[in-house]
Structures are given as C-alpha cells and as structure tokens.
Length: 358
Image (cartoon, rainbow, N blue to C red; front, top):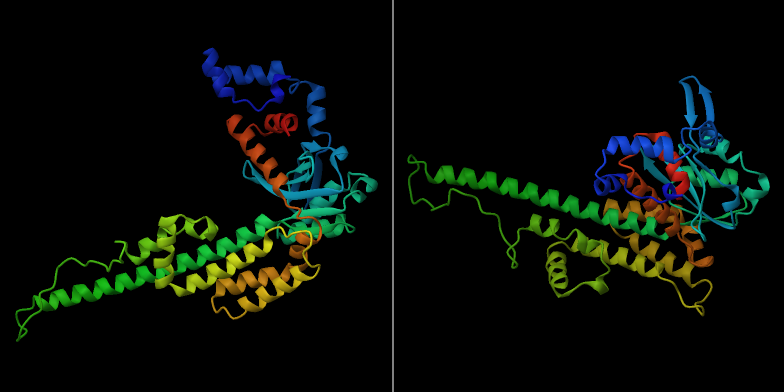
C-alpha cells in the first residue's frame, strides 16, 4: 500500500543508490497493478470518447466517486500536463468526487450525466470562482443548488486591479523619466556648443533622476510597494507604514483605490451573530455607490465585477461564510503529486497514482 502515499521517487532512489529510470519502471510495472488488465480497465472505465468535426477527443476521468457528493460542494480548475482539469470536491470532507480533463460546459454536462440524478440533487450549496463557465455548469446540472462566490477569488481580483493601477503608474513614471533624460541630453549638448554667445550653464553629462526622501526614485517606490498592496493595513509594520505614507503622498489615485479595496475586504470579514439581516446588503450597496465616483478604469472594472456577481457574493454571509478553501487544498495536493512524481508526462500512471492520493 506504499504507492498510495505521494512520496518522491527520486528521494527513494538516492537513499537506496538505485537508477531512477529502473526504479520508476519497477515501481510502475511490478509494485502496482497499473500494468495489469484489471488496473487499466479500472483507470479508463469512466473515460469518454467524443467525435466531432475536429476529430476524436478523449475526456479522461481518473476520479469518479459518487459517494463523495454531499450538500456542500466546491468546483475549481487545475492545470495538469498542459491541459485544464475540472475538480469537484466535497467542501466539508475535502474528498474529490470528480476529476475530468475538460473545463467546457457542454463536456462537463456529459461527464456529470454519468452520476445518478439523486446524487446530484443532494447538493444544496456550490462554492465557485467567478468563471462564467462554472456558473453555467452549476445552473444546468445543479439547478437547486445555491451558488456562493468564493471569497478568496473575489478579493484576489480586487488585489489584481490594485496591482494593475500600480503598474500603470510605474510605466507613466518611467515615461516621464525618459522624457526628462532626453531633455537633459539636449540641454547638455547646447551647453557645449561653442557657437552660442553668452554665459553657459554647467550641466552634468549624466542624467540623475529625482529621488524621494527615502532615497528611492518614484518607479523604485512603486516596484517595491508590490506586497504592500496585498497586506492588510492593520498588519503593516513601522517600515511599511512609512513607505505607504510616502507612496500615497505622491500617488493619491493609488491611495483612493487601496482605501476602497480595503473597505471591501473589511465587508467580507465574518459578522457577529447579532448582525442585522439586511446590513450586509446595505453596506455593500454603499460601497458600490462609493466606487462609482472613482475615475480609474481598473476600479470601474472591479465595481462592475462585484455588481454582476452581487447576489452570489452576498450569499457568502447569507449561508454561513462558505468558501472554496478545501478545493484549493486539493489543488495543492495535486501540485505536490506532480512534483513528487517528477512531472506528469507519463499521464496514465500519474492519473493512476493521483486516484490513490486524493
């Protein structure tokens, strides 16, 4: 039963002083039942063959476990061997119910049709990211389930928009520096022109960009503030507070966006049990009205994202603060399995091992 553990084969080889290729081949063909007919049938018994105008396509379903369906499920995607897989996980136990090599709604519908209707009807809540594909999948196959937008994906989108503002400002500062350097070089050439009559200014040959009070240029300040955008302001240390003050003095547009995103993050924090039923809706509505006055395209885009998914975002507080955290932990296990299996190029055997691990 040792092959059910996601151990690193290369480590075993180093300990025993064996050739990796020989040990891997022995492990695959002798220690497990992967090479046997029953093992191959078990591995591919749920695979689906599709025929279209583009030719034949095989949807691999290495994990198919109806018994893991429950009232609270989570759906996410994972990249394996250059292809995207859909992972449906029990959000309470962390056990995988379905892993298939497609993220298309039409193909996922075919995969889910393999489950009994009673099994699918068990699902009351589905946590998912903001993908329109997964929204369509849940609407078509789990019409009774309440959809909850995953808190971490929503906040991640907000932080990505903050980073987009920071990068845009950095590029503008670099452009300003380039223009200043060009102007400086022209002035330097003019100062060395002997044909010009009158006093000449003493200008350094080398251009030196302006530096702030902490010794950094504005592009450097923006570059080194990347992680400042991610951390909650309440957790900033003394050094980060000083950097934030300097950053916001020079870029008030960024300060406004950071304040609005942090306001949204505070709204997402769990509320006490005596919290008024409609207070969440009112607070989120006030935030949407507040961001409407922001002129930056990035914040307009994030506001539009929140408005489009408002009800699914509100369901986070309405139905017990459910998140996609367990589905993300399954993704981490898959990533670890890929690393310890020295990649997933031998896809069939990787699927075989993965079915034993998760």
